[in-house]
Length: 633
Ligand SMILES: [Zn+2]
Ligand SMILES: [Zn+2]
Image (cartoon, rainbow, N blue to C red; front, side, top):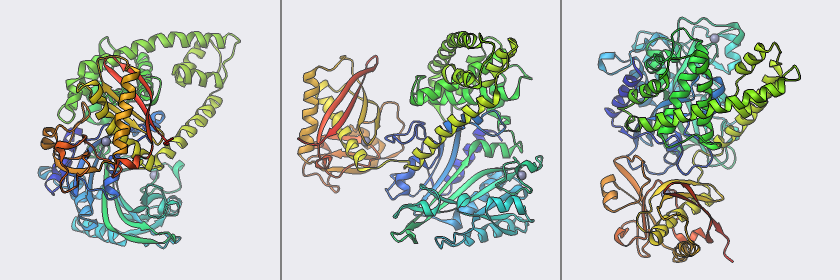
């Protein structure tokens, strides 16, 4: 089955079961400084899983564009990709295990003709939570019983095997089982990880994974004496995970059931597509095959996969407004493009291959992501330009290599420096070195590489754990100040001012906006600050309302250029003084914005003096302001 077909079937399946299909959030998270990219379907929905009311209701489904930068160096094998789509469905205090698990099973094994994927149930294996003695959380027997019944309905006797841990799995094997229980390390979800690490008040719960078995793969003992679903040999592929948020940690470390229980399902679209064609090579799915037509057949498989993954990811990143640069998201995009450029050189593709491949991606996804097709030329131009720049950098890098090699040898550290500064992967350095008849210490290079990667992994694990949507008091205050700032800018500079981008951390806010008048004068900046501070002092109510997108547009609510919004939206208005949730008095509001929040309830809680710390140009017609809240003198 094609990737597009699997996605379509998933969304239709859940729509038919009362779910609102919501658009994918962008790859760059909104107002979330803790992570560079949206890496899962859950990420943009965390506020709602924590209790905020979602304007689209209690049943949601989507296909979320996701990017995992930390996997970039693993790409090249048969299963890793940086970009992927995650299929998701959510129950926000609505249905629970007895609906969710049968739906997962029905979707995956359902008849092709009736909208299912048609996987052979005999190839599916599932896992459930084994329980945790330390905290007294019981095993998830309810999920195990549901799975047993579902398999029985297909004529399969599903034995339950309590493995407890991965180590037990590789020591004992499957023992003829189909339903396996694993401990907190494998089958427990919370933002902080295992139950012992969760702070008081934090929600979490057991999860239940579904694995597809590739019968063509035999277990490799290098991964353990025996095979089991969580074995890394490639025989089993996790294709979906249902998280059941049902517990809350108490002050005394005990756990109690939550009043609102949620379901969060995430399933890798590419993985389900690969299972549907029973091929354990992710790059065998149709979109990659179509892209690969632009490259000469019979090239090195690893290089081909890197090019396919990196170019597809680049098209999506540029489509979401990122351009190659030397920091943040732009740096990751640059890295993808440079690696793609380098590996494609080795394959010697025909003239025009790059435009062709980029065009294939844009057309392939045009139904789901029309922007990619509409902006096809712009995307192709950005990619071609970066390839050209890289050509020049490679020349520089070769000079540097020659300088270091002049002494007759190149150390592993040199090789790593070339990788860091010029983007030379190991293969390229080795190839130059071989031409000159000198050797490079690969072990030393790998040691440097691993050291560096572990550092960046720790950093990314840290930011992920630190809260997907950072709702600290500081960020919330700055977010409300951000709304006041946008309105103040429009008051001072005119209604041509529109938001073009935003980013808020606990320390400062950043607002990009359209304005053709060039640099702001000192007087203009002082006037903008004065207005924002006046509104803070007036202690205006900040009110959240839900309405149709159309109504919000009629009210003139501000929204970010190029953003897509669902049918029902959440809107925040600031003021007037006597506005209430029941009667928000939009016509007299100081500011109205499409926004998911969170915000302070009254502007006075911003509690400080707003200051413009910096004002600069981002590009033609786009200015950027960084603002801070200073304690009042
Ligand atoms: Zn195995
Ligand atoms: Zn906002």
